[in-house]
Image (cartoon, rainbow, N blue to C red):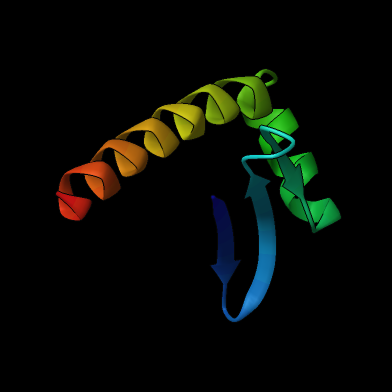
Length: 64
């Protein structure tokens, strides 16, 4: 499961279920998040793990 977040056709964040963490791809995104919400990456990663589980359940339903 992979999520790639884009802004104006530029990749800014990446999440992979193998690592289960969000990786920022642009320094300005990392800095902006850190300035406004210091624990942004931790909170966003936990939210994304939830999205992954919802998606997984949805795929299971579709397979049936």
